[in-house]
Image 1 (cartoon, helix red, strand yellow):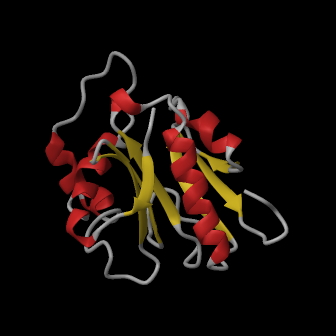
Image 2 (tube, rainbow, N blue to C red):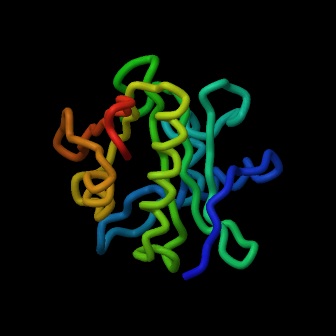
Length: 163
């Protein structure tokens, strides 16, 4: 599949609400929540006022001039928060574009950017049953903590390591 990875345009920031909803892991056999769930304060931390803070960064994947996926980071007190200097990841791709390696390339692009900017690590939280856990491990994330439902993962961005 031919796709392009590029920085998000300011005019596209509103798409992050869509991708935030797409990022919600829905176990098989479970009904999806209403789209209004993204209005929850715990979820709005990922997208509210995106682009206004110095650590906000987003890349999108585009197929045939349509944005089909996004990876974004910001320093926030979210589910994957480890400290106030570590950007937390969010990533999502429309279902019909999954399993083509696009998510992996989005992750690698963002990790390379963060490494170039001198961040020491990045973090994320992921449901244990989420198929994406394998991808996160493959791009260099490690499980540092867990609860009944989620893994908290970090990826070291030390300059002597290659992503």
